Length: 304
Image 1 (spheres, rainbow, N blue to C red):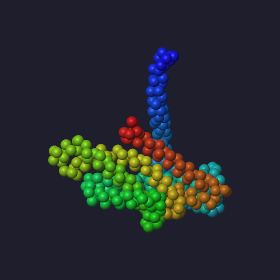
Image 2 (image 1 turned 180 degrees about the vertical axis):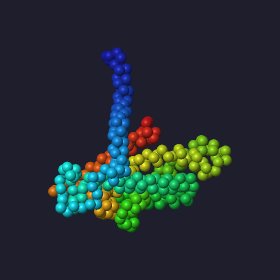
Image 3 (image 1 turned 120 degrees about the vertical axis):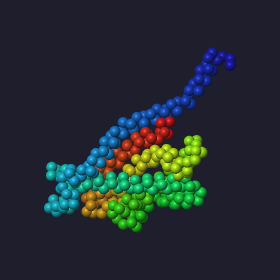
Image 4 (image 1 turned 120 degrees about the horizontal axis):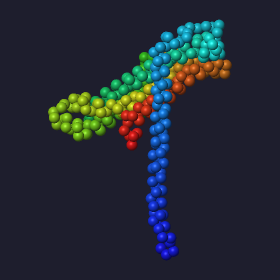
């Protein structure tokens, strides 16, 4: 074009090519920052989780008082030397109850997720391997369970199974089973189409032998990632059930039931709620940090 500055068209073209590339570059930078933050928070989360596990295991040794012992002459005592987190409405030591509640919460989270992982993985393996009507039947049942909000379904199952730790474990196990079943089925269908599986079949390996030796070992990483992320949600769900009266029953110590018992004393004795609330918050956040680290380590999509 007449009157144009030599080389300006080339410069404008280069600038136009550079501008669209800026957005992916910024996205990569943000992804790198998030990954670095998760990497730095992972040791903190692991430390919190390990501390919670140690406290749960050593609860009889580290709890200063019997968590069930009442002292009606020392109710709603504020935190001090004798009771570091104060006492509740019947004179029980809040710190001791928080310590014993750690055991209940971790047990509920770990056992319920383990039950769901085992049952869901088995159902997903059977559905993906057998296909046809078996696949359709299993997955329709899983879809039906998933159609209910998790907490609503847990409440309904808790009401049917009865209040207490056993009912909570079974209810949460049922609630989380479909997630693992769908995940395992997807992994089975994906891995079954790979060349090394076809080669194993060509060598005469039976279908279930192929599944046991080639499919399951290669499908386990996403299951582990999902399990690590589900424990925190299971602990929150147990606390919610206990808060609503369908979980651990008084006088047994549970973070959810302690928060429920202390909500009527928020104005005059907030420490009754602060102790279990802080423990619940720290444990769930720590487990989330650990779950993110496990996902980054085992899920190849996070490394793309």
